[in-house]
Length: 555
Image 1: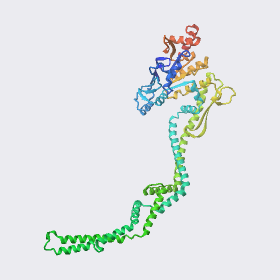
Image 2 (image 1 turned 60 degrees about the vertical axis):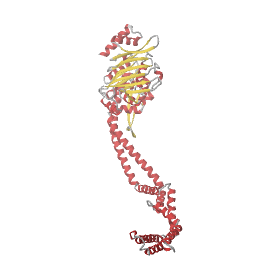
Image 3 (image 1 turned 135 degrees about the vertical axis):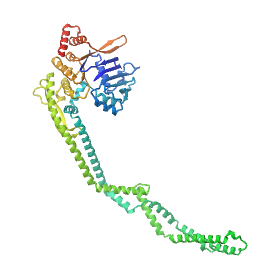
Image 4 (image 1 turned 90 degrees about the horizontal axis):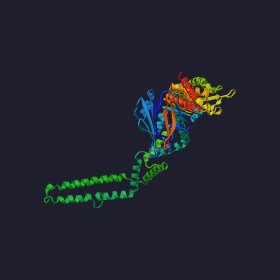
């Protein structure tokens, strides 16, 4: 529950500290005293937009801080763990700071957090119900949420959400596969033509480099043949060749046998040279024999290169390896196309199974919704009729609908407020006051099931009086037995029901007007109720009436 609220430098508030209590906390005050200012400040903790005009003194920041007791709400620990915030299982402090330039900062237990995280946590701690929120009753999603709350469908809906998401994922995969198949089949003939063209070339890894080398050799065939001829002529075949010259050198050295030093081994060295020259000549001769510069060979290599170059240009690739990769991918796509029917069949089976599982879970939820809707309509009538709606008729319709994220149902609240009036959606037949009282009844019904520490009612009793006002107060008091209720009201019958009573008022000094709030003593409550009844806190008849209201509500 909300234990303390601190507001400083906000609108007409210099600094206010309020301690709230369990049960029904009543806030009263004259129009314009600042009750809405306090509510606006508290709304900032729920993510409301910050307004620099609300900063009272431009030299300081506005601060709104609320401390909640969360002893009975261990489920909140998950939020703290997920956001790396220190967990205290007894208290939680939310704070919003607004700088004069409009820059806003949010904190949870003194840990800075994004505003969205503050809002996420605050909505689990307090529900502010004002007159404009009555429009929620007109929304189908809110009506369904009420029925699901009463049906206790939270865990079932979580399981269903997983199943529905699995179905949606399977359906997306199936749709993507169908689109790919449709596109592939429209391209099939062209892909087969492309693959056949590449297969006709049958490119091999490393082939391009080899062909380019062959082309270079064959393109220079005449020069190569001439160089081989010249080398062989010089070595062994020419008129003055190296081999003959070495024979002449060997003969001359033989005639110098007595002159040359035997240790120089010139004959053996000359013989080795002659043998090496002969070996080189044989190698070149073999190369000359192998190299037949047939123009048809060059033409064949050139044609092969042109075919490969054309294919690379057609597929916009830079290397032969990339062309081979294109061929492999075309082959894979066509193989997949050949097996597409089997793959589609498997995906369709997966989608049907996921849909069946989702429908199975949705059917259980639908049955619980129908039962909850019936009992809810009866209880809503029981509570609402005494609030000045004696001719009210109510029906909650749970009808089949296409499967969606919320199940397979459409939920609609329909009402008739007058005799012989046709049941219609609430927005078409109810006044603002009637919608307000219906929302109060709904909050009273779901209070026991809400995992919410506090609820705030902002003048939801506008437009009623007398016995109806008294019954509204009783209903708020009843809700206060389950969760903490803070109610802003102008009605003495409602205010008398409170377990604690606070008054908001203005106080002037020589410089400015200030908003204050104080918790009333028993005697002060009598005066405040008398003021609300007659406009005069000292009116004896009004004070007697006030005492009577207080005593009756204590019984």
